[in-house]
Length: 333
Image (cartoon, rainbow, N blue to C red):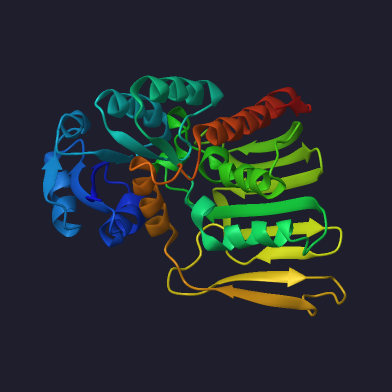
């Protein structure tokens, strides 16, 4: 197959440091253009990232017939409008999470995707990482009995008022930025949807964003809890407890490309991880895997790794979390 010709909408850090290098590495993809609101900025990025063409507007890139697909790492509030524009322009779309600010927006995107027939996927790169595939295999093999509890923590520290994550009016805050991983992974592990949630949120008095959010989710088979923050020490943890064992994922969301991913499988016979089996997986770039699989989905060789139905279900959980905070009560999903 011919490499999928990608245009990049925006000069975000994740695009420069993760996704564009991964597109270059993929035999199925080729990043051929990048757009910014400023042509000089776009040209500088193109020169630094070995991209042939630069555009001074997002719309100009979308009008280029030599581009097959776009990657959208724009601020959260721009995901919906530019996904819609890209689909209407006949481009396949890989959009950073959250693909929509809420379930209503995701539903709009589902309708647009059906109308255009293009591939549209939310970029939950963790879905394709082999460590999470192995977690599901261990669960399905009965290695920890029946899953009853999932606990996830994802935090970092960022107090820059100019950073998009700290701007409430454009979809900033911990819940949409990293809390979405807590709900997504919990749903992935249980292979089911939560029935109701209850949550707490702490707002930053200056930014108006949620700087600390925590949620408890009730699933048919058990409970899941996640906590996320934009103003705590950087931490990533994921622990899955079953009736006969436990799986801990060392770095659940951003494992190092140059190091083996590491899981711990523990039967609990000795506390303090003394009875745990260490499982190492070969180093892999999850963004490269994501690029490969997206291109294969475009060629109809495989289904998108993250379906829009999956994205809609995750958005409904996050909506329920916010309703719970507003009402100080349990909310159905």
